[in-house]
Amino acid sequence: MVYINTCICVILFMMLSYLFVKTYQLSGYQPRLFLKSVIEFNLAFGDKNKLHFTKRLIRFLLVMFVIMCGLFFVVNFYIKNIYLKVFDVLLIFLCLPLLIILTHYIILPIEILIKKHFISKSSRKLKKKKIIKIGITGSYGKTSTKNILTALLEKNFKVCATPKNYNTEMGLSKTILNDLDDHDVFIAEMGARHCGDIKILAKMVEPDYGIITTIGPQHLETFKTLEAIEKTKFELAEGLKEDGIMVFNGDSKSTRKLFLEFKGEKYLACDKNGYAYADNITIDESGSQFDLFLNGTKLRVRTKLLGKCNIDNIVTASALAHIMGITCQDIVSALRSLEPAKHRLELLKNNYCTIIDDSYNCNVVGSKEALEVLAKFKGKKIVITPGIVEMGESQSQANFKLGTMIADVADYLIIMNNVNKNEILSGAISHNFSRDKIFFAETRKKQKEILEKLTSKDCVVLFENDLPDNYK
View 1 (tube, rainbow, N blue to C red):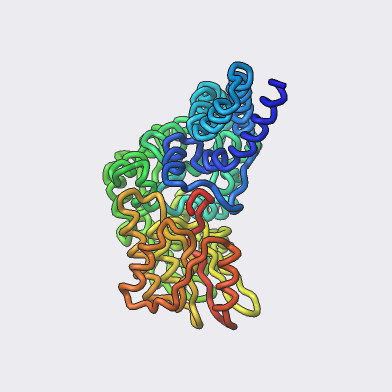
View 2: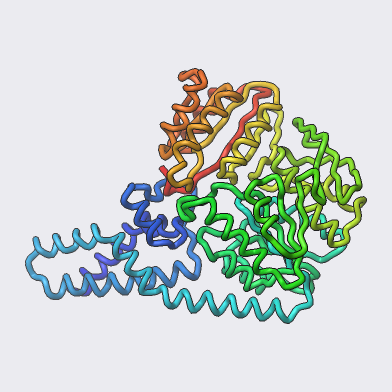
């Protein structure tokens, strides 16, 4: 009977732990962020993000299963009083978040060893290959710049780039071990949430070339200050090979500051006094046109990509491609056939309305850019957004500002989730946005119902950002 009761309790609690485990995974396996979500009751309700049964998670669940078996066996074997037994079971449930954190630290040494093994293995593979290695980091535009640079270099090279937003040690390791073959160039997107993260990635890759895109107040919840972000991004420049070459996006004040600090061979983009810049920019519903200046040569460029941020990404990527030997003609040809990255100012048209999908964007600069693009469209304009997160103490101010910008452009606003609800609402109303044109939707089903009532022929809908389930 003891074993049967133990099995029932363990199975029940493994099922009940689903929300907590999902929140833990969405928190990036970081105990502090997980505990913060639990305290604020921002658990992973809903089905926007599924629980991914990765090898790491399976190891975690096995250890947690063993701990639960031990706890419930002790309760069922040693405690005979039924009321005390029920009390202990309830107490274990209430301590479930602490049990998850305990499991995390028990398995942490194993995870560190596994990570070191894969990093070491992928680093050895890279060192054995005669291959050009490029690192790309920054607060915004990393993925877009990587995709553009890949398209430009494919004119002359066989390129392997980290897919999607794979920008961590394990993401890079997975790409190197599984995808890198007889390629000429490896492009590594490098992301960071803490000081030292880029240093680890740079040491792992040892890049020949580096790009630092726009730097801004992203992930302030973990970095705390803009200076910490700048220092972390500069770790790429410090981690270059001795004769490495850096390209900096000069449109960013912080990136320009790093350009001045770097003592090696360097090039400035997005600046009229630099190596590459854009001028005479026109943006409409079909894309963008501009003059691209590369080392003094003027090129007329047409692209399907929308927004000035994307033009800056094009200029920065073109600068490095040109430095690496790609001809001006090939650059213009590649830019003409560029397709927008999925969910990043991606234009989707049908016979009824136009959708601007910017759901992978989650920053102040990108949101401003998306609204500027929306303003260039004709017809009724609808914005759907949950706002901006991971901004630390400046999050309220950022979302209030977002509300004011939406009010200046849109006809209707649908606010998703509750996390930034009041700030966006207040910002919109402060700019005389009519309250009866603002709607709230906590689920996608509700969002769809509202949208069906608001949409009409030739309207334009902007999906600005999307949040994981642990943001309500």
